[in-house]
Every structure is written in structure tokens, then in C-alpha cells.
Amino acid sequence: MRTITIDPVSRIEGHAKISIHLDADGHVADTVFHVTQLRGFEKFAEGRPFYEMPAITARICGICPVSHLLASVKACDAIMSVRIPPAAAKLRELLHCAQIVQSHALSFFHLSSPDLLLGFDSDPAKRNVLGVIEAFPDLARDGIALRKFGQQAIEGLAKERVHPSWTVPGGVNAPLDPAVRDRIRAGLPQAKEIALRTIAFFKGVVDQFKEEIANFGNTHTMHAGLVDAEGNVQFYDGNVRFIDAEGKVVVDRMESADYSRYIGEAALPYSYLKAPFFKPRGFPEGIYRVGPLGRMNVATRCGTPAADAEFAEYHQRYGKVVHSSFHFHYARLIELLYGVERMEALLEDESILDRHVRAHAGVNALEGVGIIEAPRGTLIHHYKVNEEGAITWANLIVATGNNNLAIGRSVDQVAKHFIHGKKIKEGMLNRVAAVVRAYDPCLSCSTHAADQYPLEINLVDADGTRLQTLRS
Image (tube, rainbow, N blue to C red; front, side, top):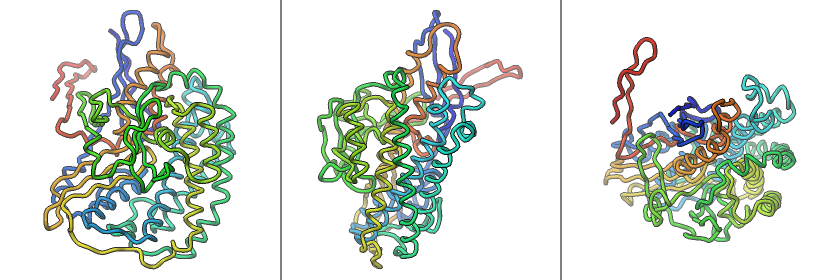
């Protein structure tokens, strides 16, 4: 048996490799998606005061620290048993929408567009963001401008672009400055124009990828994401909805504290990334997907005018439940537009300038759960504390972790369709890596294997020959 290794998987956040095992005829017999890094945040948070958790867990990731901040402060709010002031809730959501915009812009324009614009089989030396800038300068400038808008909005609100300390248990630590509101509002028209222009562009080229659409994780799974009482997509608030592959609601508006009734976590022998599953269906049958694809499937609409129009066209094109993981790209652009429109609506609400933005309390519960929608999907922070408020136990179910089983299945489908024969072309392997990029994984965020830590140590001599392998 011959093994092909893609190491590392490029244009993602974090570290991963893919092993593709070929049989004697050159056909794919098996694939394995390995996440090769380990973070230990749950463990080394033990003993820390609960109110330090937002600052600690934000350091998990430099791409989406706001997501960890918000999930963490919601868990801390539950420990304090407080209802945060309405203006604080709006400001937290505004901050989160800005992060969704900048993160989705990074994913589409910088990480995935080289494949979509230059071609999966194009010269790998040019198939990168510099190649996009050279071949599509206007679109590249749009991507830079959109990400800049989101980052500057975060900086204006929180005074820092990365790991901001503005979001705290009980609310936020300072009200919104009217001058900051006006600066963000001034940038919204251009951001909306870019979002609409990019969606129009993508709709014009998406039909060129019929083979990829049919084979990029085009599989029937469950989907999950936050919705409000009317079924509108939610990023910051709401409750988790699970649907099956046909679109039937299996769990509607799951309460945060009840997540462990529905979500189980398995450890895999070849990865540091946990594999969550829908517990009533068991492992691995309870596979589900989260993120833009999942959110656009579980929601009945977005809740803003332009995004709702795009949402309706998206489902008219591809059905009530969109199955292909290739369409993470399409769903991501709709969400980007929704994020801009939602920012607009929040900033038009004069109550967002209210000066009362923080509730104060001590430990009133020994356990708290916070759930939000990170750019890559549903994010759960669960803390237990003692009477003094010190963390005794923590568990994080991170967005990419929720997609772990689905990513593995998608990698297998792409490899088995595109790789064949004894001569392997680079474009075949690029498609295997590209389906991982479609999920926009954040592996640094999500590597928190519990109970089992698979470890492989290879002893290699000077000429590269493997002499011995030890596995835990």
C-alpha cells in the first residue's frame, strides 16, 4: 500500500496533515485527517478566578478572539446569575458582527479565493493571495478593505483589534462613544457595497464548479446553529437548533445549560481534535455540521433585507437543505452581508449609547455555560467554580471541533473521487486540501482533546529512515 501525505494543509489557521492510503491499483482505500497540535487551556485554567477566563481563553486564537471572549463572558454571566444591561448586549453583538465580517473576508478573499479565482489546477507558485492581487486587483482590494473595516470597527469599540479587554463578565467596561458610532456608520455603505458585489461575482462563477460541488463533502448530515424565537439566524444570542438531513427540526432552541444532553465528545486515536456528535444518535452516526452552511440550513431567514433576498435565492438554487460543503463559501458571503446589515441596524438604535453597560455580582452559581456562533460555527464554553469563584473544571467545544467528523468524511469523498491511477497530479491533492479550507477551520482554537491524548513519536536516523514508532 502506498501513502500520500499532505503536510501541512496550507491556507488554514493551525496545523493539520492528511494521510491518503492507496491500494495496489492506485485507488484511494482510506484517508485520515490528523490535527497535530495540542492546546491545554481547559487544564491550565484550573485554579484561576472565573473573571479571568475571558482574557485567558481569548489567547486561544488570534483570528477570532472576540468569539472566545463572548462565549466566556456569557458563561461568567451565568456564574454570576446576572442579566446584562440591554445596551451591553447590543454592543457585544455589534462587536461580534464586526468580527464575523473581518473573519469571513479573510476566509473568502485570502484563503479560498486563490482556488476559486485562479483554478484548483493552476500553478501552485501563483495560487496564493499574491497571485490573486496580480490577476484580480479590484477584487483583492475589496477583500483588504472589507477586512480593514471589520478590524477597525473592533478597534473602535474595544480599543484593541486583538484580545480586547472591553468585554467583561456582566457586560462591557465602557459605553459606546458617539464619535466611534459615527465612524463605524460612515464605513458601512462601502462595506455593504463590497459584500453585494462579491456575492454577485460569486454567483456568476459558482456554476463552473459543478464537479467540486457534487463531491466536496456532498453528504447528508445533521446541521446545527443558533436561532431566535422566529427562526432568524443569530450570532450572539438565541438557542441551538438541530435539524436532520431532510430539514426536519430534531431539537428546537436547545438551552445552553442542556448542551451535554445532546452533544457528546469522542477522542480519536489519530488526532488531538475532539469529535463531537449528536448524542441521541450516537457516535459516529450523530455527525452534524456547523458554521455558515449549518446556520443557513437551520435558520428560516437571516432577518435583514438584502441578506434575506440572497438567502432565498441560495435555497431556491440548492434546496431547503444545502448539502455540499463547497457551499460554505456561498453561505459565508451571505453571512458577511448579514453581518454588515446587522451592524447598521444596531447602530441606528439610539439605546446603544446608553451609559449603563455593566452589571456587578459575585458567585451566585457554581456552573455556567456560554454559547455563541463563532465565524466557523457553534462555540461552547462550560465552567465549574468553587465558592470562591476559582475554576475547578472547564470544557470547550470549539466550532471546528463540531465539524471534525464532517471534515474527515469530506476529505475521504474528495480523495476517492479525484485521486486515481498511479500518476498523481498536484491539482488532485489541492482539491483534498481545498475541502478542508471550505470549512475555514481554526485548529489552534479547537485542539482540546479530552480524556485521551493520542501521541506518536518517531525515531528517525540521519538519512530519514524511520527506525521505531511509539504510540500512546
